[in-house]
Image (cartoon, rainbow, N blue to C red):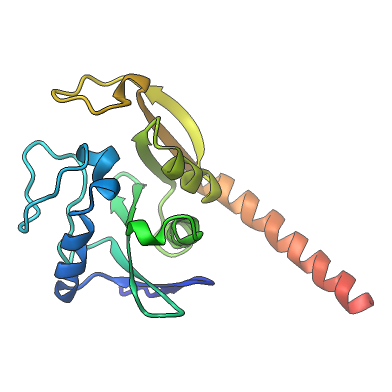
Amino acid sequence: MTIMLETAQLKLRPSAASDRDDLFALEQDAGVMRFLNGGKPTPLDGVVADADFLMPRGGEVGIWVASAKATGAFVGWFSLYDHGDGTAELGYRLRRAAWGQGYGSEGARALVDVGFSQLGFVRIVANTMAVNRGSRRVMEKAGLVHVRTAHLGWPEPLPGSEEGDVEYAITREAWSEVSSRKAGKLAHQKADQSAD
């Protein structure tokens, strides 16, 4: 099933082989990779020894490439990795020029919505380093809540890893409740406006 998504600012489409150069260039930015591998650029083939995160190169299932609606410019990518047990893992990586514009929250919310409404997941999780405040805000704005902080033993710890890694999650039931409240609030606002 091909799912195209649109938010207020973004267009998201399944990744394709033609996205390879943009995906590769994204991982050459030390700021983008800071909390993933300490800021090291990745190889063109995307194979990184001992990596536990995605290195998409285009065409992978569950990866959506995001572009700005206003300009068509490549913004980054979002993912829902199917764990095969009803759980999906939300991921995202954005160009540094796209930070602070609400793209991360919009894209993450869109994927959470499609994950529950169209793909049938029962739980969506996301992980990051505890010190990655920006990514944690994106998770929270997408409706996920902090579940736990774990202190993992990494062979090559990154700066800040002493504060641990955090897991955020949301269930389909919690998402449904929030969606129902938002729909009710919107209907109430429209009723108030039409009464004026």
